Length: 172
Length: 288
Image (cartoon, rainbow over all chains, first blue to last red; front, side, top):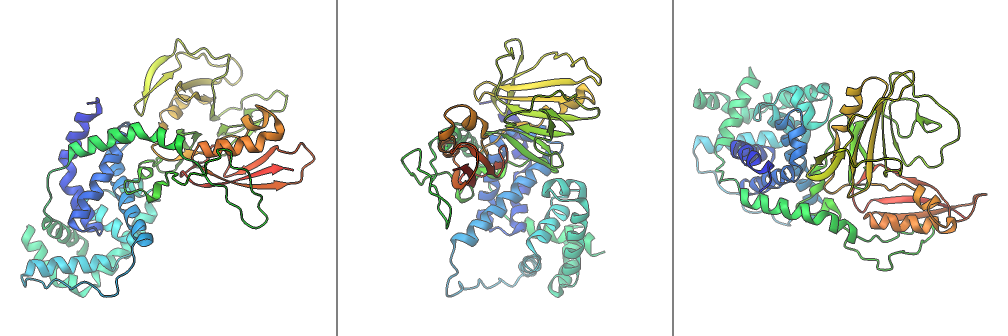
C-alpha cells in the first residue's frame, strides 16, 4: 500500500455517498452512478498526488466526476442505438414521495447538460461559484449565467412548483 | 425564494438513492494495474497512416499496422479524463511528462534561443547565433532532454506522480542584469528536463515546477529536431513518422516542394509539445 492510500481511503469514505447521489442527480441510474463514481475516484487515485496538489480537492474531484459522466454519455451517443419501442414505464406507487422524486427528475431533464451540472454542483454538492468555476474550468461569469438560466427554467416548471413546499417540510 | 427550496428538493430526491459501501479494494486494484500498464500500452500502440486525396502515403515504419491503439475516449475506464490541467492552464510536454503553463503563454517565443516573453520552450530546433539577454519581468520553462553539461548527481530526489525525479539544488542565479533565477526538475527514466527561469524571482521559477506532472493517457506531439538533425536528413520524415507511431499517434504525411533536401520535416500540426489523445492524427509536412 502506498503512502497515498490511507488518505485516499479516508477521503472516499467521507464522500462516497454524496458523490454517488450527485451522479444520480447529474442523470445516472443508481447502479450506473456507483460505476461512474468508482471510475472517477479510481482516476483520482491513479494521480492522487495531483489531487493533493490541487488548491481545492473537492472542486477537483467533482471536476473528474463530471468529466467521467460526460464521457459516459458521449460513448452512449456513439455506441447505443435507440430501440424501436420504449421500455414499459414503471407505474408510480402512488406515494407523494415518488411523485415528488419523479417531478425533480423531469425538471432536471428539461435543463441543458451544462445547466443541470451547474445546479447539482451548486445546490447539492454545495460548491461555491468560485469552486464551480474551477470544477467546470469556466469563468465565474459563465457559472452565474448557467445557474441563472437553470433557475428560471426550474422556477417556471409546474410539476416542481407543486412539490416545493413538500420538500421543505420534509427537511426542516 | 425558489433557490432556497432547490437544495431541499435535491436533498430529498438524492436521499431516495440507496448507496452501497465504496469498493475501495477494487479501486486500488484497478489503479495499481493502470499505473503499471500505461507505459506498456503506449509503447505497443501502432498507428495506421491515413491517405486522403492529394495526401501522400508514407510507408508504415513499424510494418505491423496494428489497430489496437489505445483510443482513450472509447475505453470503458477512460483514463484521459484524469488528465485535467488546472483551470486557465494547458499541458505542454514531452511524451507523458508535462507541465501546466498558463494558456496565455506562447510556444517558443524566443530571440536567439532566449525567451523574449513569458513562454514555454519545446523543440526549438536550430537557434540563430546571436546574443540576447533575458528580459526583465519574464518567467519561462524549457522542456528538453538533459544536456551533457548538466550534472544532476547532487540533485535532491523527489517524486512526480509516483515517479522518481530529481530537483535542482541551489542553482545560483545567472549573474546578469536582470538576475535570472533558475530551478529544474529532471525525470531520469524519461530523460526529460523541465528547466524554469525567471527574472522576476526564485519563487516564480519554483512555482512553475509545482505543475510538472506525469499524464495517465494523453501524450505530447514529439519534436521534429531529433529526426531532422539526429540522422540522415533524407530519412527524417520517415524517422519522425516512426516516432509518432511509437508515441501512439497517427501520422498523415503531406509533401511540399522545397529547395532544401528531400525528406526534411518542414513542420507538424499540432505543434510539438501539444498534448493530445493517443490516436490523434498529426499532419507531417515533408520536403520533396
